[in-house]
Every structure is written in structure tokens, then in C-alpha cells.
Image (cartoon, rainbow, N blue to C red):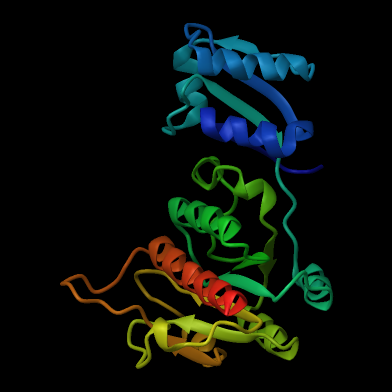
Length: 251
């Protein structure tokens, strides 16, 4: 049986309607709220034949487990996640110049959700994560991702070092972000088929991950902090890739 998950909050519910209305299984709404945004969602659901269940606010809070629910919770079929075989297929038939984001043991749901959201906006072709010690698509991830959890291909792999070798065999350059790297991101040429590899704030890239990168780069740090949140750093780097590719197209 396919996994189910909960989508919590107005924005996440709107994204679920926009990108996967056919996957909605159940809806609970706050029986004491009737604001226009919530009622607009209820109307959209009704138009699709999806019934809502008026529910006491305390019960919604229990179901949300600490996530602000804003009066609505959905139960949906979890989006598909892929493995190494599907990644090989994607590499064999690329849509444009390949651009993948690789997350090495990112466990914080807010970071993962933010990375998915920015990856979607930046035109990334897929996000590669490890099966072990990486967060799944939780309600918090889905809420922060704002629809990208439904649209961004996610590949969960058993052996990240082997996967990086696979990417290189397919002709991609593998660039790792590391605070101690000698070169900055602004010295790199990203106008190539590539994968951007990000580690966690606490440990950065693991040794084998680092050794399987073609090159390492860092973001310049002029202040007193030693590192950036991984989703912030990933966002800056993804858009540096976008900037270079747009500039190359224009020139």
C-alpha cells in the first residue's frame, strides 16, 4: 500500500490542490473558522467532490503535532520517490543541461523543505538524498516546500559515493560546498552539466563524499559567523548556477 502523509496549513493545502488534487484522501477543517481563505479552499474541494470533515480545534492541534494548522489538515498519498535505477533513466534522457542537487545527510525538515522549494524555482532536475540519516517528506517538509515536495523528483540512494561516480560517468561535474575550500563559488564555471553537493551545518561533507567531488568551493564569509544554514547556502549556490547559465545564454 502506498504511503500516506498529512499536509498541514493553508498554503500547503493550496499547493496540494494545485499539484495533486487526485491524491487527496481526507480533509479536516476547523469547525469554528469561516474566514474567506479557508472557505475558498473548502469551495475548491467541494467542486472536486472532496468532502471536508468539520473538526474541533483541539483535535486539529493534536493531529498537527505542533505544526500551525491554520484550520485545515489534509491526508494525501505521499509523492513518489525514486531510486538509483530511475536516476539512471533521468541521466540517459536529460531535459536540457543537467543540474542536480545532492544533500549529504540533511536531517532538518525545515532545511530540506527550503532546499526543495528553491531547487524547484531554480530549475533543478532532481534532488538526490541518502536513504539513511536523511529526513523524509514529513508534514513540516511539505509545508516549507510549498508544493515542491509534489513536483520535484527526489532520488533516495543507498550509497552516495557510488551515486556521485554514476553522475560523473554520465558526464556531470560534481561540485561540493566546503567552508575550507580554496576557491569561491564565484571562481567556478557552472555552465556545464553538474551536480551541486551540500553537507550539513554541523559536519559538512563526509569524507567519501568530499573525495568523490571533482572540485570544492566555498561562499566568501566576511562577518563573524563561520557558516550559513544549509538551505540558505544551497539557495545562493543554486542561483549562482542560474546566473551563470542565463548570462551565457544572453552573451
